[in-house]
Image 1: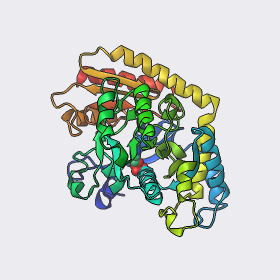
Image 2 (image 1 turned 180 degrees about the horizontal axis):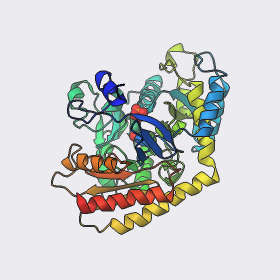
Image 3 (image 1 turned 90 degrees about the vertical axis):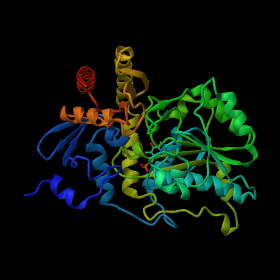
Image 4 (image 1 turned 90 degrees about the horizontal axis):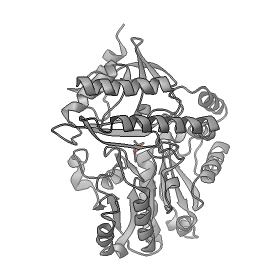
Length: 422
Ligand SMILES: *Cc1c(COP(=O)(O)O)cnc(C)c1O
């Protein structure tokens, strides 16, 4: 019998992977809680929540039960002209925990599509109102996904180089600090009347290397944009659902966005789904007797009932006092560990927000995604039964909330060991 590894190598093409030089993919046969088990019976602690999606652990029995019930009731139905209980309930439950101004829910399939929808809502909003505000603001190191619109509003990098000519123009600004806020505002001032929207990852820029900015500066920048009628798209695809220690990054801010994007933890990491929410004002710009003012967007699986029921179950779990206590416990433990290694000669820039802990491994080739230390660290942790996936020289942990102290301690211990040995 051929192994999963061997069969995979013959037919599959993996994401973000140079297939020639990468090691063969590890065949995973089972997940339970914070653990993944490979075909040889080896166990891994999933310390990155399987690319930032898993909230309550793998194969969570309650989510499985709810999805299974839904599977036997209604697996899928066209969402144009039709609706269903899970989509209605999920919209009600989600809006109830978002800022008061979020009034409408638009479903799609993943984080990138949630971004595409938000961008199209903003562009068509101004179009429907007969105003030409075509410019878009984004952060320099932004990451909003891999489809063309999402790539366009992401920072230019080795990832986007091959597509450069096909990406639309975006005005890039620095992430705000108390020091550069004035400068950013001056940059925007010159073009403010032409800017339709500003899209940003709030507080933590994940893919850029877990870069963090402070809530006061971001709130100030948002207020500033709002005063100039620039629509605010808050990309909470990564930061949503407890990651930052609060339910949403917006809960740290004094300003509120016009649109919000969600995916990743939305279904607890069980099924793919994206959501874009918006204010009544945006919705009203499309609400008309004129057919041409409708939002021209949809996907075959829009509001898939199975994904909705997974999201409903995951939200229920997330709001349990025990889960909130677990998030707080992880936050506290991260804080203690962060403090203990902050002064280590081999690390710098130790930073933390809620369940996200990140640090820079000091190397000669700072910041490169392809830096040599990345591979060494990745292999070291895998060999020791922990899945960590550094972004270049940035090592980060963001575990599922079901992780126990013993597993967290094991990850911390291995980081200390890596600091000794690598
Ligand atoms: C992952 C991510 C996306 C894209 O989501 P996909 O589901 O991978 O398409 C968008 N924005 C942010 C902030 C992300 O971290």
